[in-house]
Structure formats: structure tokens, C-alpha cells
Image (cartoon, rainbow, N blue to C red; front, side, top):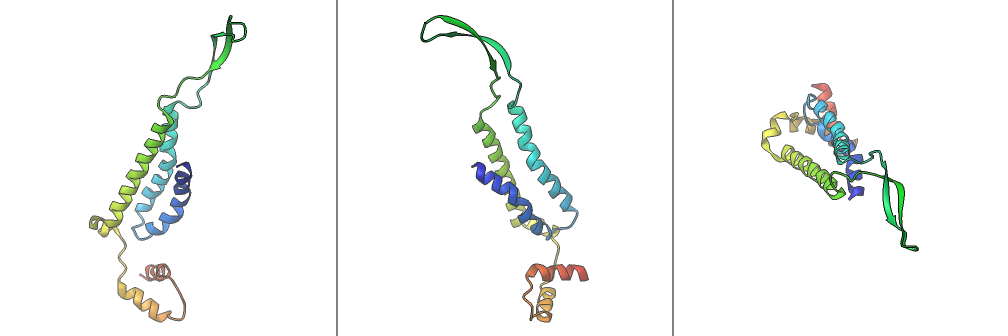
Length: 149
């Protein structure tokens, strides 16, 4: 599970920046803030969990197994975390599911179509006919169209 979390974290910028090019530029700031929060929110969860606290030295009474006598020993004792590792990963899972649901909604609902950049199909076809000898991708044609208009 940790491997898949790190894979999503490392590839999200590379995969979603070209996708964000199909929306108005004003949304890029929100995207970048979201990228920053995707690292901040798990860090806050970890701080709330209480990991990395300073241990205290406490005197603990132990029974010596060989002699059967009680001994007083000073050892470092850390506080227990406020919630378990399973709860921490569950919170990360909820965050990922919410992100996936938001992406699916933006990608599939017609409500968000008005926020996309409109590129007429005729413009892409005209660019393809003009550059028929080259093997430009749709993204390259889209970029040239945006530069012209």
C-alpha cells in the first residue's frame, strides 16, 4: 500500500499538468495549492498521531527472571500514539478516494464543460491537413491553435 501511495504522489504532477492545460489558466493556482496540500495533510495527520515525541525517563519495577527478585530500572518510555497506523492509512485512503471522486466528477460531469478551453474540431483538422507530412500529436496541434488565437 505504501508503494502505491508513493507511486501516486510521484506521478501525479507529471500526469495531471497536461490535463490541466485543457482548463482555463486561472485553475492552475488551485491545482498547485492542492499539490502542496497533498503533502501537508498527511504530515498534519502524523503530527496529530503523536509520532516522534520525546521519551521520558521513568523508573520501572521488573522481576529478574533468574533470581526472582524485583529490580527498579530507569528506562526511556514513549507515549502511545493517539491512533493506530491502520487509522492513519485509513485517513490517507479517504483522502485518495475523495481526490479520485473529485477528478471523476470534473472529468465526466457536463457541469464542468463550460470551464474547459474550447478548441473547434475544424481547427485541429486544418492543422493536420497542413502538417500532414509530420506526425504531430493532438497536443501539438492544440498548442499551435492556442498560440494563433
